[in-house]
Picture (cartoon, rainbow, N blue to C red):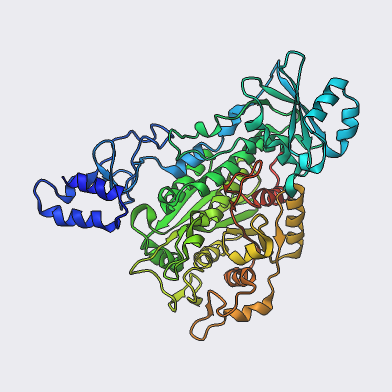
Length: 578
């Protein structure tokens, strides 16, 4: 039967186009027509946050609900599907709704708990001298010395019956990422069935940061594992009483924002198309009183004058994959105006200047800037800062197709400036250009854009330190100080005008890359963006948005980088009303 042929193709290393060819060849049969391959969703919308019992449809012009042509492996219900899941779940919405999943592991008013005593590394010897001989002997037998390499490690001290009497945590700057991450290994490494636990000292760390360190240690991303869900992803953690003196709401909002950013970035591109980013923005707005969203999609981008957003995204499929400009607004128009712009390339093939396989492997993260501004927007709205907030997200997939934009094409931006395309893999700056022009068309006291923009930024500063470009000296100093204050380091690079000549074009106002030179790429990209900034203070953040390896509190996958630093800056300038 035709379905058997599809199963055979699914099990063998055969060109994925052959099943589709068989569909077309057999379409003349009355017993087997293309219409028999049309899928209908039968699952109740949002019946569960777990995707494991669904088969995912290919995105269509009528997403998530219409009949969809698909092919490949036979699903449990007998229909054929390219994917192993037919998901009627909007993952952008799921990411927003499950961002606070760590909160259930913080308790109030615990009467009986296992104490956790945090001791600073430099104070370990003097602390140990004050303990009884049994504790001293136990620490020595466990080779717990208090040296720098022990920072973030804990020692379980048993009582006479062998039960857990106390936990001692050694606090220090773990690998340079901040003392608060000393607390991040505890949620998944402390004995289960013993707690809850309670901090009796913090080792000199602010209680807010103690709680945040614990919260980040609860994170994992298990949605797409068998039986996985937002609940399963924290099933291996233990509970702790809220640290005394911690600002619970502030910690919750920061944790929610970081979990949101991580989830959005780590979600595979098949489930995080431009339409899914729109779902995330709309769901976020629904959580905050007075917030609203709007969007411009597909060919409407041309009539609404976002031509470069359309050009970059036009080769992608219709429906959820169609390019769009997403806007969120919140707050009183009489308050200081903050505008956030986030690069939302949900997958970057490189376009016709195709990336090599290794470079394309994690390009689901190329919407990390969009994820970060949504997380930052949540922190601003949840903390009720006295600002008028505007968020703009140009969301596209940089796909390959017959209508993809080409090297040598000349594109016109929203402000009329023309760009000659030197490389289609420098697409992020093109969509940001239209959004930055739109941002400057309304009054703006501070404009911030976040983007996974250049590999050159990573060459300069590595994967974990975002590069920032600022057109105001006092603002740059404030941002640097804020980043160091909250252990969320960023580093300023110069907007060196001398490199502007590298963008010169013989045929257009500028090129999008400096051809023939591999030097200064992050600066050149920032100089390109600066041409679209008008009369406002501006911060451009070029960041990785992805942990390449797992460390306590920083698991491999999507990451908010520099977001807490930006919030600290904004909050210091525009605090919430008393």
